[in-house]
Amino acid sequence: MLIKNKQHVFTSSEITSEHDYSQRREFLRQLAAGAASLALPSSLLASECQSPKLSSKDPLTSLQSITRYNNYYEFSTNKRVIFELAKALTLRPWSLTIEGEVENPYTIDIEDLLSDFTQEERIYRLRCVEGWAAVIPWQGIPLCKLLNKAAPTSRAKYVEFVSLHRPAEMIGQRRPTLDWPYREGLRIDEARHPLTLLVTGLYGKDLPPQNGAPIRLAVPWKYAFKSAKAITHIRLVEKQPVTSWHQAAPSEYGFYANVNPTVAHPRWTQSRENRIGELRKRPTDMFNGYAEQVAGLYRGMDLRKFY
Ligand SMILES: Nc1nc2c(c(=O)[nH]1)N[C@H]1C(S)=C(S)[C@@H](COP(=O)(O)O)O[C@H]1N2
Ligand SMILES: [Mo]
Image (cartoon, rainbow, N blue to C red; front, side, top):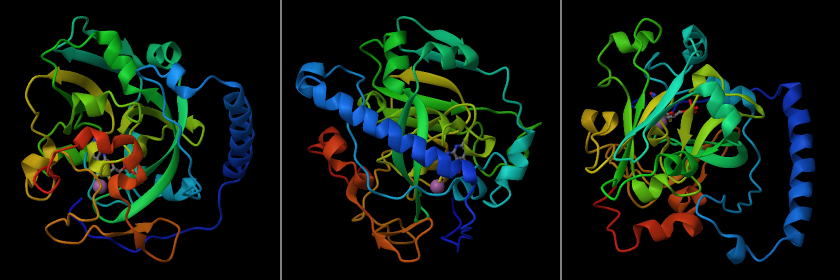
């Protein structure tokens, strides 16, 4: 995270399955568009966890770029070696525990999670504090559904995410680069927002280890450090949790971390971004382009103070 924007290597030799993938996706998109035209007005269908309609003309970032240039401090601070080091991670068995301020705490095995919850495809931008951004087709489960199953109490104001601590396999954890395990957090309404996804796959395949397998978050309107990888515990809490990045550098990594072109990182501007695969930088969008869906969460808040 502390490493500044570096030149990326872009391979034009895309993996063939990626092409097949795009074609299948276009077919599914047309199917969905057909279904939508027959559907009732969306106001009548609105239910709490329902996925919002998104449209994106952005070209997808290649699978190659997404899986060969990663941030994952549990393995290394060198983004180009993560995909090799992360092969050491044992992905099964894996369980996810939802606990804290809930009526029904539970632990679910990853296999049951994958079969019990329908996975949706969402195309989201991921934008890092370091200035690079990617457009990724994720598969996942709206976090809202998992939280509802646990029945949060009225004291649940925040949600803490705890990632795996396993220094035997995660060799970066043998050093105190961050306070392990990696911990992140959201306000409960952010966590329940239908855009917040627990990711299980990308490009129609299992999530690769370097991208946070078997389960990671995607919170598309925030800087990507909020999207914790290799999550084992989701804890509903009353007080704003202390996160690993905030603990390490409070002035650089705020709790909210909403993508905001008008609030600079203390050491560099956030007004422009480098979309992976494009040669020219482009202006960064407020809330990473999701203002229509999420601006209401922050009405009345000073986003300079709550950065
Ligand atoms: N557990 C864990 N999650 C993490 C990180 C990390 O170091 N450890 N890095 C974050 C940061 S800074 C970024 S930019 C994204 C990178 O995700 P990607 O490698 O899939 O692009 O993961 C986020 N989630
Ligand atoms: Mo990042």
